[in-house]
Image 1: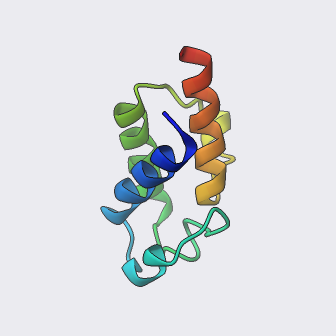
Image 2: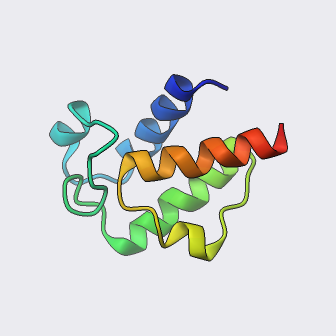
Length: 85
């Protein structure tokens, strides 16, 4: 799965949980999930679980703690997919 497809899947997942859909439409890798997209920390856990299901990976707690931006999530997921591929 290429980076663009991973990014699209992440934004599709975030669309379910964001309170700021307008910001998601113009999101970049640097978009902050909690601050810019208004996803609260409890919902961020849901986002991570959904990513695990969609991508067939497991994200460790210490990795999840590092997810602040869409780019952070992208890099962690991309690394997991490459390792399992």
